[in-house]
Image (cartoon, rainbow, N blue to C red; front, side):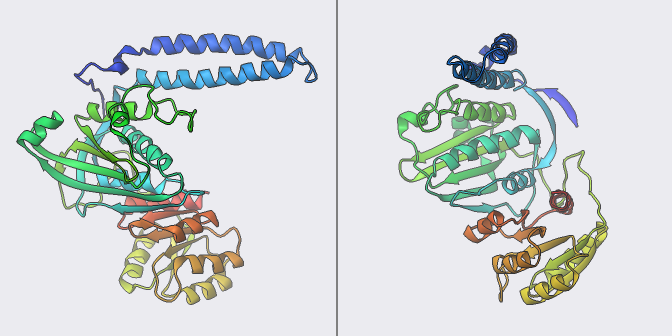
Length: 381
């Protein structure tokens, strides 16, 4: 993995905000908080000034949080890059989303071939988080969040309009069915500290999309945005495609297979999927029991629940769906660990499983490395 400094050739507002100012601001806030804390320790809760001191400390903490946002600008151009499949980055980001309490349907459509880019995975994950956070806030009553990856040739005039060289690119498009944006809002969304809905979300600093654009620019890419009021918004992250390959298991350089030795109950009604899943689990060191129906899974788990550490459950089954099986298993063991294996859609049934205590989900198709990491993540919860 290479440690390099990437600079955006176009001057922007981030270069005008220095880390030194943020550091000094944080030091000043720390001194004020120390004095306020000393005052609070010498004042009784019944004193009329006590609540004022508490509020002063709250404001200091908010100011410190704001300073930390500024500090992030200091390292905006520091990147640790490697060749990685954009599909893997997107899949991992989607599997870490928390939709509890939100009526959101997630639909993920990943390109069938790996899309290799030269990127810092942590930085791009920040981009996904910032854009998705905006999308979720745009759908307060619920809606659909769609994520699509694809390769695209951007040529001649289209390339010039983006400020890119003609070539092949990866497009990661995140679309919501939310409130959308008027033209005047759309023109300012990348402006630092701009937030169109500050009254509804006062905690927003108006820096998320500024960061996102800066990171994508430093990857020699662009963000293309479309939005329509009462219809929704779409953000396309466009990055240079490094190469294409048929190898579907290209890890981040430092990622390795993680082995285990626990016992797994694998549930699904497709023999081919069960066979592959059993072989993968065995190769990773696990002991595996496979069952082809929900009723059989419940029967086996009832008999061997003390020995079974994890249930991997396919969402789409003919006789009983994943939610029905999960609820029956949970009656046998309220603390059961279940990993849901699902296709590209996270619908209301999946979200209900997560609300009821399902430990997580993995989107199909997945690599062996991703699968090995996900198993350890769920088993260690």
